Image (cartoon, one colour):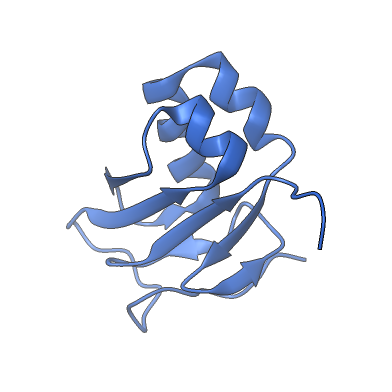
Length: 101
């Protein structure tokens, strides 16, 4: 089951305005993307899946491969489904598996 709507806003009602999301990349995802973070402007309703598709489009196959193994946080809350809705101003953290403790 996918997570409920999470992000900076409080409503999941689609609007005609775009949704701006800050994506922060860590470890292997940062290396594959070639950037630490970036802002994505997405149509409403935006989802984790839509943000990742845009990131893959921008950065290519290497990032797409890394994203298959990643977990994600939205506004510091773990998400378990890529259909989680992102609201305007949300922060999406891309976390590859980490070794060690």
